[in-house]
Amino acid sequence: MKSFFEIEAYQELQERIDNITIDSNAQWGKMNGSQMLNHCQAPIKIALGKSDVTMKSNWLIKVLFKKMMYSPKPFKKNAPTPPQFRSLGDYDFNIEKIELQKWMNELWEDRNNENRKPHPVFGDFTKDQWGIMQWKHLNHHFEQFGV
Image (cartoon, rainbow, N blue to C red; front, side, top):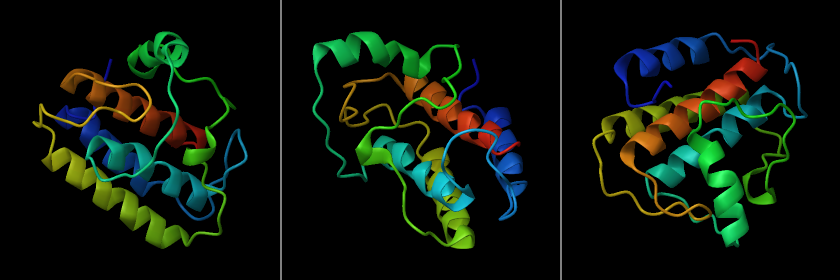
């Protein structure tokens, strides 16, 4: 499984984001490109400890969904997004793209951090799990927009 923290995977994601344009259409789901770019920032901010997102968590969520976050199995298309992570606004595409690239760069620079705060829903992850989860989420949405 690829990891955001591996140079080849990171560079691939950077190349793919460059191919997302304002005219890129979603192959599934309800988000437009600017909403997707905004949405993709949230998990990165969580990994960096720069998010104030809170959610109720319980053992069932942790047992059923935590392993899915970093398993090799792809995320399901059209899976529901928790309200705290929905990007429903009217965002500026170019600004959101620059912001996502900025957050991706910051996480890359912080890739060796072994002491991340627990995820607000799933709790603790290892460095490897964080890297896989970040790559998997970005890959899912980049595929959604055909790149």
